Image 1 (cartoon, rainbow, N blue to C red):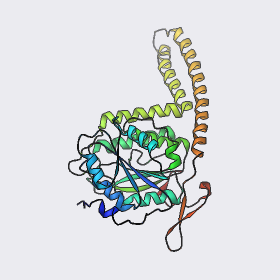
Image 2: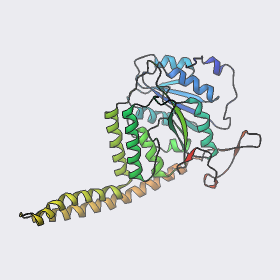
Image 3: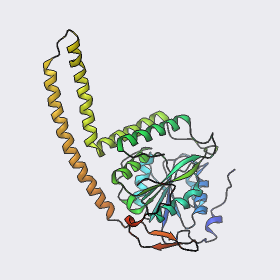
Image 4: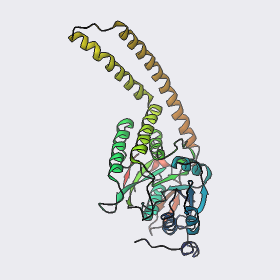
Length: 349
């Protein structure tokens, strides 16, 4: 049962900010979520006093805007459809020390927000991923979505050499320097994939926190199409692999081409037919071209990574907070590389 309260219950009492040393902004992408967005906004305001909640309406045809505004959110609109477009706009518009991103469908446990923010600040980390833990055995995950998520997680781990438990989660907390150096290029639900690959390629300090996950409330419908969006996400993974790992992508293409050429040649040795000689010459020329392209792209990628890291380093590190003897969080100036403790459920890098 969801308890519905008004915005005055949270804002009227002038509660002390939970993290007074930093500004925290919540980004809530929404499209036709009038049945759920109010509870998400009120839950965030209750769980994290002092947070600024920004609901980005993505061309809704229902009363999402009115419900979000009545609940106490700052409502902005992004007319171009797609979650990626919303995130790109929000990252450019909003200025804060800490950014929390959560879907407006009320499937994520908003009460986990303080723990995720505290994890980011106590690290300090640049990215904290909320991995979904269904509240009941029948909860939230459609079978196709669960299988697709597992497949994509394993593919990314294989291609990029880093295992992610729930890379498609829409519940994340990020630092200012991560957000302001992130060149969002995705249009739709591929944005989570792009965020995850960005973490892996730049090797930013990351952590993972388990969060509750439940069914949508009645009247809220999923916008995610298992096959269409799954294909787009997988295409994005392969595009980013080509873009970020050309030194591995192009040799794989070469190996595939040699296999296609070599199979008929081997067959010609075993069977009574002659293998066309020009195919061997063509394969050799193609091999030389692909190797050349691979070397050029690999050098370009390394230069681009160095440039991206320099841009990332231009922004200050997250303010480090630690618990004093009486349990309150206090600010402490500490280099990000000087930390050994790992307060999160698990640490990625």
